Image (tube, rainbow, N blue to C red; front, side, top):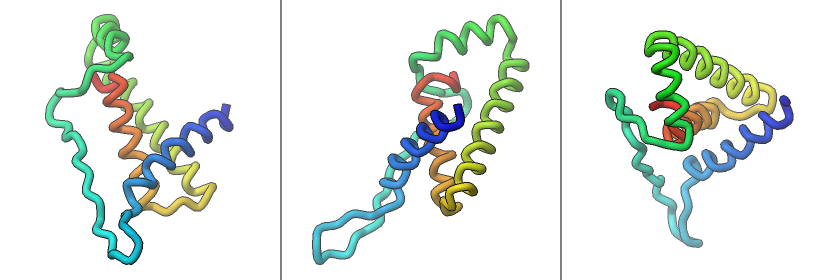
Length: 113
């Protein structure tokens, strides 16, 4: 289980690493790449494959309990990412990028609906 989760975190890290490394042609100074990220304002989350499940859970559990459970899951996930980064010597800047990547991926999958 830990190996599978570590693999998923490594895959996310490889995608997040591209955000931190500027690219340029040989002999030219690289300008930092700026990526527009979707801003989360209010409850404007994207719809994804898990949106129907989240909406059903809202009906069954209620908004308050669902948000409590979702907050705990996000907290545990962030702690796991932090532990992984500590175990493998990943810099704090990359750890922050991994957590941000997890948030945007969860939004795209519909977990934040």
